[in-house]
Amino acid sequence: MTAYLLRRLLSLSLSLVAASLVIFLVMEVVPGDPASFMMGINADPQAVAALRTQLGLDQPLPLRYLGWISGLLQGDFGISYTYRVPVSELIAERVVISLPLTLYALALSTLIAFPAGILAASRRNSASDLSVMGATQLGVAIPNFWFAMILVLVFAVNLRWFSAGGFPGWEAGFWPAMKALTLPAIALALPQASILARVMRSSLIDTLNEDFMRTARAKGLSRGQALRRHALRNALIPVLTIIGLQFSFLLAGGIIIENVFYLPGLGRLAFQAITQRDLIVVRSVVILLVFAVIVVTFLVDLAYAAADPRLRRRRT
Amino acid sequence: MSTNPTDRSFLRMAVGHPAFVLGFVLSALFIALALVSFIWTPFDPTRLDIAGKLKGPSLTHWFGTDHFGRDMFSMIMVGARVSIAVAFVAVGIGMIVGVPLGLYAAARRGSLLDEIIMRGNDLVFAFPSLLLAIMITAVFGPGSVNAIIAIGIFNVPVFARLARGAALSLWTRDFVLAARVAGKTKARISAEHILPNIANLLIVQGTIQFSLAILAEAALAYVGLGAQPPLPSWGRMLADAQTLISLAPHMALFPGFAIIVTVLGLNLLGDGLRDLFDPRLRRGR
Image 1 (cartoon, rainbow over the protein chains, first blue to last red):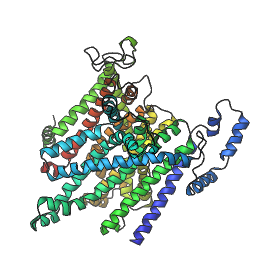
Image 2: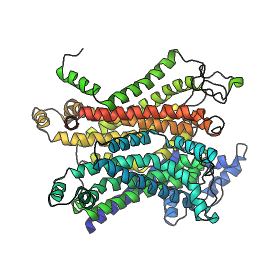
Image 3: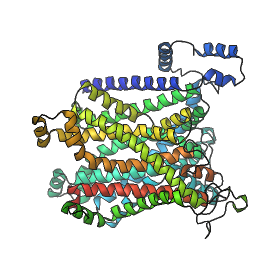
Image 4: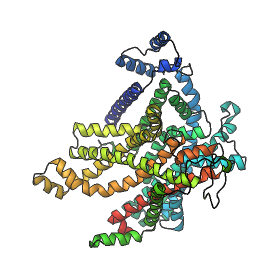
C-alpha cells in the first residue's frame, strides 16, 4: 500500500506540474498586454513600461513561471489587475459560495440518483425501470442553463417562492443563504442526477448477474437482503468514480449557472476575469479547479485501493 | 437494395428497436430543418419588425416572434444549421486527431510515446472543459471557428482513449497475429484490421459526442461566445430570452425544446446503435 501511495503521489505531482506549465504557457500566448489593458488605450508608453516592471512582466519567461509557482505554494496568487486586491482574497470570498453550491448540488443529485438507479435495476424492464430510463434520457438532454431559466420562471416569477437571483451572503443566516442556492443547485443537479442514476442502474445490473449473488439467494437471503448486503457495495465503485468526476465538474460547471442566477461565485469571477483580460485571476482560478480535479481523482483512487486490494496492482 | 443477408437482418432489427427509431426520426427531423433552411424559411430570420415584436405563437409565426419581431421558427431553422456545423466539425477534429493517437498508442503499448499520449489525455480531462472553452473563445475572439476548436480539443482524448482501449484487446487476437506473421507493419495492421473492427464503437461514441457538442455550443453561445449576430443561434436566443422571461416565455421555451429534442434524438440514436452493433446485447433484449 505504501508503494502504491508513493507511486500515485508522484504521478499526482507530475500532473500538477504539467497542468501549471500548460496554464502558464496558454496565458503567455494570449494576445494583449495586461499593462496596456489596465492603463487604457491612451496611456503614456512610459507609464505602461513602469507598470510592466512593477508587475514583473519584463522578466524572462522561466523566472516568471518559477515566481508564480513559488507564490502559489505560499498561498500568494498575485494581485488582480482589475480589482487591485490580492487574488487569494477574491477567491476566498467566492469559494464560500461555489463550494457549498457544489456540495448542495452533489447531495441533491445523489439523493435522487441512488433510489432511482436502485429501483430501475432491481425491477429491470418494468414500468418503473422504463420511466426512470426515460426521465434520465430527458435529464441529460436538457441544458442546465435552460432548466435554470424555467425554474426561475416557475418558482421565482410565477409562484414567488424563491428570488430570481443574487446571494444575501452567509451573514444573512444559514437558511436564507441556502434558499438562494436552492434553484441553482437543482439546475446543476438535474443532468448529474440523470447520469448518476444510469451508472447506478447499469453497475447494479452487472453485479446482480454475478455468481455470488446467486449464492446469496441460494443460502436463503431474500432479494432485498441480497441487494442491500452484497450487491450495493459491489456496485458502488463505478458510481464513486462518477461522483468524484461530478464534484470537479460541478465546481467548474457552475460558471454558467452562476451567471444565470447572478451568484458571485468562482465561475462568475472567472467569467468576468476572462472578459476583462484579468489573466492573473483567470490562471489562478483555472489552476485551482484543475488542482481540485486532480486531487479528487486521487482521493477516489485511494478510496478504491483501500476498499479493493486487487486495484493496488500497477495499472496496465 | 443490398443483397447481403446480414444487412437486411440489421435493418429489420433496427426497425424493431423503438429507441433507435425514435432517435433516428428526431435526428433526421433536425437535420432536415437545417437543410431546408438553405432554400426556404417561413420568414427572413434577420428581418426586424418592431411593430410585431414579442408575439406569441400564431398561424403566421408558428413559434412567435422575438424582441425585434424576428420570426422564431425561421431563426431556429437557421440555428440548427449553426449547431450541426459546429458540432460536426468539432467531433470530426476529435476523431481525426484522437483515433490515430489511440491506435498508435495501442500498437506501441507501454512505449514512452504511449505513456505520453495517455498522460496527455489525463491532463486534458483534468481541465474543466467549459471553463477552458470559454477561455479559448474569450482569448482568441468569440465566433463559430473558435467555438469549434474549443469543443474539438476536448473530443481528442475521448476518442484517443476509446480507440486505444478497443485496439488493445484486438492486438491479442489471432487474426492480428496472422497479419503480423504475414509481415504487415503495425501501421498497416492498425489501418486495415484494427480500425474497421472498432468503427462501430467510434460511430456510437461519435453520436454521443455530437450531442454533447451541441450542448456545449449552446452554452458558449448563451454566454455570447458562439456564433455572432446576425447569424441566429439557439444559445444566444436563450440569452436574449432570459431578461424577457416573464414577458415572453415562448422566447425561452422554443429554442430550449429545439436543443432538447435534438440532443435526445442523438442520444437515443447512439444508444440504439450500440444495442444493434453488440450481438450480446441484441440477444439479451
